[in-house]
Image (cartoon, rainbow, N blue to C red; front, top):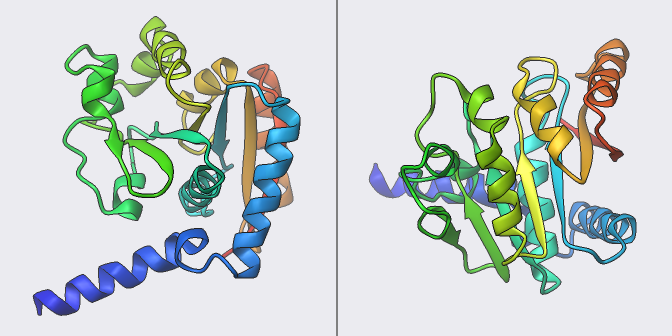
Length: 218
């Protein structure tokens, strides 16, 4: 039974991280194209890039994970942060512990270096959500979040942020305002046009710089 569970977990990870498990696939090539477009937009500068979606279950976390892997494969040093302090997914996708993470750093219970997990995929490092907090918006909108970005950009070329759905909580608007760019992930056949438009308007109201949209096949 234990071996069956391990095989199932490995299979799920391969499906989620298709850029890593199947680099010659069409999907992997699409993420490489996205990676290149982001690099052109940033002009080669160090930057923070946030991924969000109008609602939950639109493939946002999987997209963030694959983009992070694609960037790391091109020798960039990447820090992927799970900033969804209400319903985190990154530690499940990469099958790593979630004992210390973003919430612990922002609350002063851990140092940045102690909350970062080094993967075996290029120069990809991951900061999971950490201990879930009762008031995540207060943490994510704090001065500590800005300091974390500044500190992390001293060590990494790119910071990718997996954030909560923008129409469900205020957390994402706070993070989008602090980020250099935002990518909106939309589920094909799932996201209504009205919701996509509303999400775009919410990000614009937060003075976010929208880099583009990922149309994700569900």
